[in-house]
Image 1: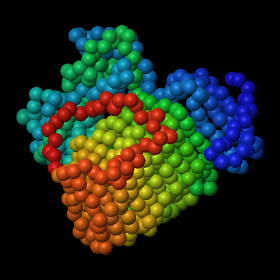
Image 2: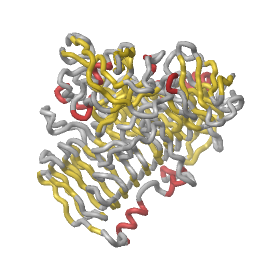
Image 3: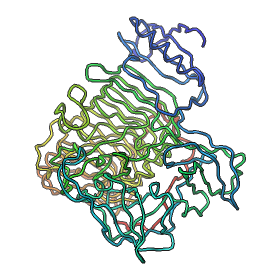
Image 4: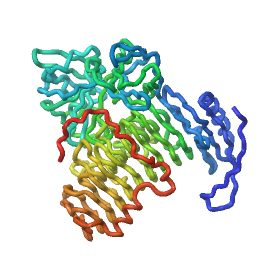
Length: 640
């Protein structure tokens, strides 16, 4: 490694002529670990300058996430920055290259892959392959068996009977699959999606029996509201060798350690094939409220090829939750999660995961070809931080998640976070980000979501084409029969360009809010081609909604469906069709400007032009829209 060098830096952003020194540690893919140890050692002394870990271009391979803890904190008014060298593209990759391909027959190829877990994603020449899947959905035929729960289990809130097995009508694509534990069975319903993982298949005449991995199988089959599974409706079956028959499909046989791929015509002897293997790529974690990671920055890094192997509990796997990224990790006898104060649900760690941290800046980074549930998760006790000027594309989950559903009460000693560790996320900016092709597998997750949080600004983002909503902020419902939370407020959803949402799921809105959030604002957004464009759901309050442009005909541009919503002022918005629902108390709608058969006026056009990414970050917008990425067949969708 080159010796650290001192560089003078003019901090123009301070508006003064002060020159401050930086100490630069130069890193490359072969020496990053060594450099990080040197930085840690250097930071044990009083910090007299900013520290920059300058990353040369190239691929930095990880089999597990890189851990940056509180020992990397910037101190005494200084920062520590993990930064791409000028003109360089460092790629943090969790993928392994697969070589040695042999033709099986026709366009079917195989290669050895040493991997102990199920493979959920594969990239061939930069293009996403899909798990081998059925051409049609299979018809459900009811419940086959139950799973006894005593209520003493650590994952149960009471005794009951969970679903253990279901029946499917036999069809030509259903088999007694040779590796049943790798198969996935998917069903979407209204605003939710479940991915169920079997442990075995059986056949009774013209009926296929599917028995689930437990206990997650019982938990995911016990949810209420739209979380309920319709056992007599359709299920989509995927990830089985017996279904491998279409170009672009893959299947990994764990038992044989053999990866199969049905070529689209690629020459597999020269193709670049990447199998994601690391669950996440970067952890920015302090250990408690008192020992946070502070003043750490990540700039210009590309994050690619991570994975997430679904929720895990006592060896069982699956995916599902009643809403958004509040996933169900505990059994509730009647499925009602409200009395648990949302301690029955959890959220997974992101590709970049932040906890117990202050002054974290993630700027100018790229997130692409990811298998995680969330690209960036600011999960617990994160403050004075930002995600700015980042590019998100081709991600199984969403772009940014803020907070946690268990933050209904802070420091209560229940749930995931201990007292002294649990903390509300606040004073966070998520701005000027370009977001495409997100939530392509975990489709019930909005592109940007926040749970309980305060002084969060989701502004000037450009989001297009989500399977569900674009932005959701807030948690708790007024029908919960637990006291109204008091933590959230002073949030903004402003100056965003959001459109073409709800490509698959229904309900929700392009912009969706929940719970009391006094002092919060929805302002200056341009919303188009989506249903229920602005939707303060049950128990929402404290919002001012004004000077937005909504170009959506045939749907509600504003929707309040509950008389438990209150104290919401909506005024001076510009719409194409003045379709609203307003059942709230003290929820006023005034001065709506309607342009049904004429162009928007100059004031509205100015709002539209100012929405989305600001000039300083427009260089992240590609010259052409990214190619549409889909991993599910185009089944008929019941539009609403």
